[in-house]
Each structure stands twice: as C-alpha cells, then as structure tokens.
Amino acid sequence: MISYILKRIISAVPTLLGVFLAVFFAVRMIPGDPAEVMLGANATQEQIDIYRESHGLNRSVGEQLVIALKGFATGDLGTSVSYSRPVSEMIGTALPSTIELALVGVVISSVIAVGLGVLAAAKRGRWPDILINILSTVGMSLPTFYIGLWVLTIFASKLGIIPVISNRPDIPHYKTLIGPVITMVLGLTLVRTTRSSMLEIMEEDFIRTAKAKGVSRKSILFRHALGNALIPIITMIGYNLASAMAGAIVLETVFVRNGIGKLLIDAITVRDYPMIQGTALVIAALMIAANILTDIIVALTDPRIRVTGES
Amino acid sequence: MAENKMLRIKDLRVVFPVGGKQIHAVNGVSVDLAPGEALGVIGESGCGKSVTFSSVLKLIQSPPAMISGDIELNGRSIMDLPEKEMQKIRGKEVSMIFQEPMRCLNPVEKIGVQIAESLRLHEGMTMKQALNRAVELLKMVEMPDAEQRIGCYPHQLSGGLRQRAMIAIALACSPKLLIADEPTTALDVTIQSQIIRLIQKLRKETGMGIVFISHDMGVVASLVDRIAVFYAGQIVEQGNTRDIFRNPLHPYTAGLIKCIPRLDTESRRLYTIRGSTPNLTTIPEGCCFAPRCPYATETCRTVKPEQTAFPGGRSCACHHAASLN
Image (cartoon, rainbow over the protein chains, first blue to last red):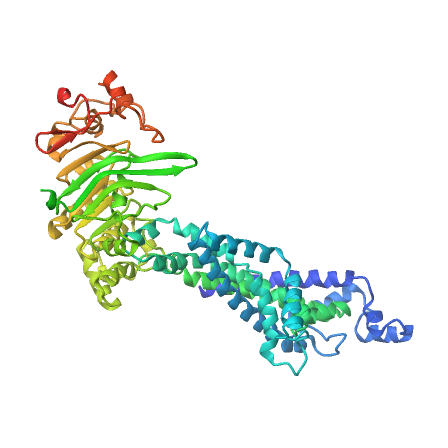
C-alpha cells in the first residue's frame, strides 16, 4: 500500500511538469503585454521598459522558461508581478480558504445527494423518484456560475441572509461559506450515481440472501445495498472533490470570496505570469492529491482490494 | 394427516407480466411436506421449481408478479401476512440457500458478521454472543479453521467454503425447514458430494425438513424421501424416491432417469429428451409434455391430464400412466 502511494506521488511529478509547461506557454499566448496592462494606457515607454526589465519580461521566452523550470525544480514559484510578493506566500494565504470551501461543500452536498439518491432508488418509479430525477437533471445541466447568480439573487439580494461580496473583513467567516455551499448542493451531482449504483446492487443475489435471512427492508437498503454502493459513490465524491478545487475559480469569483481560484482569475486579468503559473500548478496538485486520496479511501473501504489471499 | 404438514402449497399460480406478455411460471402446483421430511424437486431450468419455493418465503416481488393459490406454514396461511410478519419467518422458521455461493454473500462484510446478523435479528443476541455462535455454526458445517474464518471476507474463501458459510447462515436460527435451491449446481463434482453429505448429516442432527431443488436426478437420489417432478410450471409426478426411480409413472420422469449417465451399461451415447421446454406465455390445451412425449396420443394433445393418485402415496398427471407402468 505504502509503495503504491509513493508510486502515485512520484508519477504525479511528470503530470505537474506538463501542467506547468502548458500554462507557461498558454499565458504567453494571451494577447496583451503584462507591463502595459499593469501600468495602464498612459505609461511612457521608459516606464514600460523599466517594468519589463525588473520582472524579467525583456528576456527571450527560452530564458524565461529556464528560469521558470529552475523555480519549478526548487519549489520556488517566483514573485507576483502585480503584488510584488512571493507567489508561494500569496497562495499559502489563499489556499486554506479554498480547501475549506471544497471540503465543506463536497461533504454537505454529498450527504444530501446520497440521501436523495437512496430515496430515489427506494421509491423507484414513484413520484419521489421522478421528482428527484427532474431536480438532479436540472441541477446537473445548469452551469455553476448560473446557479451561483441565482443563489446570490435570492439569498443575498432578496433575503439578505448572505453577503453579496464575501471578502470584506466585517463579514463573519461562516457566512462566506453559505452561498457557495448552497450552490454546490444544488448541483446535485451525486444523485444519479447513487441511484443507479443502488438499483444495480439491489438486483444482486446477496440482497436476496439478506431478504431470506429476515433482514428488514430498511436494513437491506442502508446496510447491504448502500454498504456496497458506497464504493462507486466514494469514487465519485473524490472526483467531485478534485473538481471542486478547480470549481473554486467560478465560485470564488461569483461570490467574491478570497481563495486560490480568485487569485488565479485576478492574475489572468493583469497578466501576472508567475502568479498564473503558480496557482494553476497548485490547483493541479490539489486535484491529483484528491484523486490519490480517493484511491486510497476506496482501497480501504473495499475488502476485495484491501484484503487479499486467505487470512 | 392434514394437520401434520409443516408446509402445504395449494394450487399455486405465479404469473409474471413481461413486456405485454404474461409468463405463466407456476401453473397450479400443489405439494406438501411433513415435519422433518426431505423433498426433492426435480425439473429443467425455468420449470417453476425455484419460483414455487421462493414463494414460500415471499421472495417474489408482487406486484409485478401475480400470485394466487395458498401456502400454509404449520397450518397458517402466509398469503396475506404483512411484510413484518414474513421477516420473522424468514431465516427463523424457514431458511433458504441458493445456487451461486460466489454471489450470494455480501462482498464487503465478514463471514462472521453475516452469520451473526440472523442471530441478532431472530435470537436477540449481542454481537459477541452471535460471533461465538457463528464459530460453532462454522464448525458444524465442517469449515476448517472456523475461528479464523469468521474474520474472512467471502472473496477469501473457495466456492465450497462459501456454500458452507451460506449453509451456516441458513441454519443459524435452527429453522424447521431448509429450502436448498440448487446449492451444488455451481460447484465442482467433488465439492458437490461433500456439500450433499453435509446437508445429509445436518438433517440427521437437526431433524429439519428439507426441500432440495435440483435439475439432476442423481444428486437428489441419496438425499430425499420423496420427489416431485416439475415440468412447465406443474408437478407431473410425485412419489417416494425409491418408487420413482424403480418405476417412474410419467414419461418425463422416465426420461430424466434415463438421462443419468451410467457406467454399468453398454450404451455409448448419453440419453436426451428430444425437443425443448415449452414457451410459458401460453398454457397448452392438453398435456404440456405431449410435444416431446414418445407415447403422446390425440387425447394427450387436447385433454389436460389430471393428477391421479396411485398406490403408495404417489400421484401422476399423465393419461397413460397406468398403462405405461
């Protein structure tokens, strides 16, 4: 198991390098010169030249790549062009709030979605199933930013429960979580996976065995069926956690909440190359970490993987 | 005699609506079982034998299935019993074991926990008591290293051991009746005979009644007192094992017996019954075996044969039973 985890971590390095290179070239293809964007339309050529030189932008792309790769190898993500502070320090400040959002959001939305999925499977073909199916189809079809805007409209403008802009210091921290979490819940991503896994398992022979033992319907549903359906469900939750790290870009922008996603979007706006590279790299690393974590949890949950051979 | 039956099935009919058609899986089956008696149920795949005896535990979802007739356990009809009452009967009064031991055990729970579940449900034991009892049960089904095996998951055991674990689950609460639905079909021949010997031994020890469902005449021969032969959702012949083997009344039974490979005869080809089982979407007018029967006459094709009693508690549904005898 430990050697497997190590292998996964080592194999993540080339992936991260690939992401880093892709982002390095992609940002340089965005139209607009960082110096001009930063200094504004009224900057003189002299100012622009000084700015470029101080940030190493006057060097060739090849030289910039070498510097960036050296940074990648040593873990130095460089200095933010727009904030003039080390990128790693900025990310370090923003990261906890993004991870917090992803974890809280994924946990709450998973619990609700699994509950609805089990209910739909138990009431298969009847009105609760049909209703849940319609809701989850709508939730999954609508883009996150669209749901987010509706959540803002209803909960912030109409009801005034949550702030429209979350990164003001006077707002209690928990309130900044409510809007994004509601948005994640309304996505209802897990409902269908849960329902179909449950229905599949309910057809298995061991469910009939449980029934023949005199096990109650409730216990069959939650212990025998959900106990087995949990394996594909956990896999999906892990996938959701990984995509929540990237999804933070949208949620943090819509709800104006500080975090690594907002850092990335702001950096793109001002062409802050090192910051874009750094945040993209960290988001990719988080996704990989979430995937590895999922595989480990699945392996621990499923005795067919965890325990091999006769004891 | 009527009071002395632990299981009585009367004119059971089970119809499955499938895609606009109706499958008549069981067409008026009547059979009963005295306490401690062992009944062999023989028939080809899809002849309604599993459906009939799954109905005893109400394991058939209804609706969609339409079930009529009557099933009595110890004189009490279960047809209108609510689900809660059925849960008390399942695994306690009547237990069932199934064909595929590979797929009939919960893959994510330890064997011990799966045995303990019945004990905790029906006997009100604590987990610890139930696990101790599980070890005893595994010893009873001759599982080697029972103490260690309760901590095993199903995938760690071989097919034969899994079937032993299945039997331990079924026998956990000392049921009065065990329904064994082709318990040896998915196993190797050597393991098959081990399991049959085990069931024989357990029957002697516990005195429970057994319904042993199989498509193999040879498998049931040594195990049961009485045999019911199913064909197309009906019982075509019933009688004592010895009588049935020595002197089958129904041409189908005779055919099945001839199908058992023998080493002591000269014939080189194995016997087969020509044709195949009828489509159960329509019930034929006459005898349902007529299209495959070498003795079929015009009467067989138009008039449905009634169950007729024969000496020695036998019965047979064939127009020619007396003359073929």
